[in-house]
Image 1 (cartoon, one colour):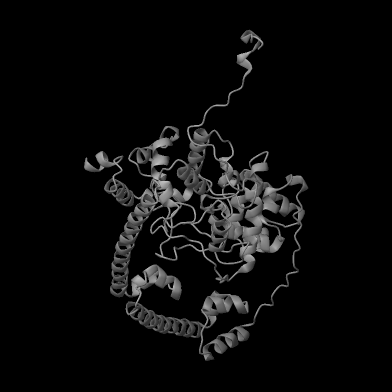
Image 2: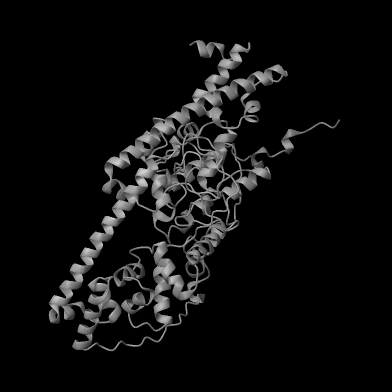
Length: 507
C-alpha cells in the first residue's frame, strides 16, 4: 500500500454544498404546463418529514419571515388566514418561496407560483379555494404515480381539465366543503376536513363558455411552462409599451377609439398605457377576441419590436338618426308588447337618445318605465315562490343538504336565499350541521375501530404495528396525523404489550 501525502491535497478547493434543513425534494413537472403548485409541494415535503403542515411551516419558516403579523401567527402555531395568496403573485407568496428555498437549498421554487408574471397580473390571478380534476387524481393513483396538485388547476376561472375535458371540482364529494389551499391536515388529493379521497371517474362536463376556457388554458399553460426559461421578468411597463405599439401600428386616432374597439373603458385603457394598472383576465379576453392572440403570445414572448399586433378593424357604418315620428313609433311598439325592455336598452338598440325621447314623449317613456317596474316586481315574486318551494322540498330530503350545495344545485346565490327566506335558510343550515356532526362522529368511531383492528391483525402475524405499516392498510391513510386517532393507535399498542408509549399515555 502506498503512503498518502495529505499535503498534496488542496482542501480549500473542495466545494462542499451546504446541507439543507429540509429534504431537497424536486418539484414535480418543473418546466411543463402541469408543474405542481407551491402548496402541493409543501404538502409532499411535510409528508416526507412525517409532520403535519402547521408543524412544518410554523417551526421552520419563522426565522425567514419578515412580516411581523405572519411571524406572530407562526409563533402561535397558526398558518394564518391568507393562504389563498401562497400560489399566486404576492408578497406573501414570495415570503413562502424565500423561506422554502433557504430551507431546501433549491432555487427553482418560485416557478411553482405565478410570481414570474407579477408584472402582467394583479394578486387575484389565483381562485379562492382548491380545484382538482378527479380523473387526473384517480389515474395517478391507479398508475401508482406521485399524487400532486398542479398550479394550473388553481388559476382563477379555469374550470376545465385540458387532458380529460371534464369539469374541475371545487368541493369535496363527501362533505361538500370548499377546501382552502393550506391546512393542518392538507394532503394532495385528499379532503382536509373528512380525509376522503377526491379522485374518481367523472363524466361531468357543464362548461357554458368553452371558448373562454380554451383562451385561459392556451394562455396560462405556456406562461407556467416557460416561466423557468425567462431571462428577464416582465414588468407592467411591457403592457403599456405593447398597447402603444398596437395603437400606432393600426392607425387608431386616439386611446378612446382603441378602447371602444375592444369594448373597454377609455379611462381604464389610459391607466394601462400609462402603467398605472394591470388588465384583469376578463379584459385580456376581450383583447384576445379581437386580436386572436393569447396572453402569452401578446405579452409574454419575443422583443416588443418584433411583436406583430396587426388588427383587422371592421368598417363601421354610421347609424341614420331617427326622426321624431320614428322615435314615437318605436316607443308605441314597445308599449304594445307583453315583455318590456328598459328604456335605456330600447334607446341603445334603436339608436336614439334617451333624453330626446323623454323631452318629446314624457308620457310614453313613463308608461314604459312603470310597466318595466311592474314586470320586475311580478318576476321577483314568482322567483321568491319558486325558491320557497325548493327550500321546503330540501328540508324534507332524506339526506340533508347544505345551503352552499342548495345554492349550486338550483343556481341561486346564497345571499339572495338568506335575504328572501332567513328562517328557512337557518333551518337548512342547522339541519345540515346536525347531520354533519352525526356523520363525523360515526366516521370517527369507524376509523378508531379500523385502527384497533389493523394493529391487532399486524401484531397477530408478527409484524410491528408501526404508523407506516398501518397507513398501508388504512382506508384513510393520513388519519394518523390527527392527534385523536394517533392516541388510539398508541393505546392499542400499549394494550398489546408494547411499552414504548406507556409513560406518555399515563402522564
